[in-house]
Image 1 (cartoon, rainbow, N blue to C red):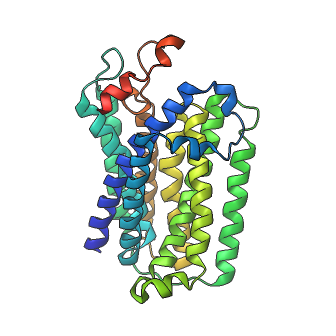
Image 2: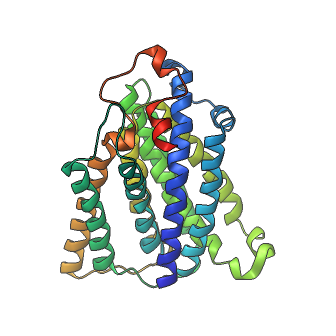
Image 3: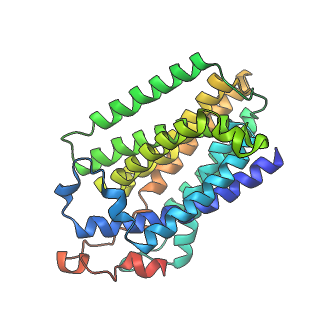
Length: 314
């Protein structure tokens, strides 16, 4: 169990680095194209993002995070690993806070640090109260079909709800859809991780790796559109909250993972999740996370490559 925690934290570090790099790539894309051009789905968006070295670096870190995640899920339950991966947002915030400022001189304030503390406390309280343990290596086929169809329906509803809406509404809906997709992808990774001891032949001889390729590609496309569709403050909560929540539910339904079920444990788990949601929602609006300056730059300045966010990440 301790090894799963260490590997989960390593995955969080990699995904935090990936998040910073890929957000910068998406921001450059948003600056280069008029917002109206990003309203619909663009199957070539990821390929255009891949032309930017900073985005490619982020993609490589994402692969490293995936390697640590699959190892963590091999040794620990979904309900333990995925909540720890939410630490990614805290790591991004901490890095940017150390850089000192955004735009014309924004520094962290007590509200942002309070949100970071709330996130940490929420994760800690939930994991301590839930004490996730046990679980089976494989889930029945029928359970996978039910979970897959339910996930597809939830993602479809979230995506359809964004049509014709404002940039904030589109980013919110696509962020929720992305988080749901990531949660289901984590469950597939958990299934695939059970075959690691059998080597490549065992891994590629099962259905999970091929389903993961499809689901992972769809999730990456959703994430790219969510970040390009509108404010990061709108999409980030969906990324950070829906992923562990969906993974926890799937861990219990598919793999029969055990969580604390006493009245005290249930109350503590719900309290931890509520505090976590509050922290994520508040921290997602920080200008350190969104990169929003105090005053909106002119189109001429916004089109340049030497933005404040670029300088902050150098």
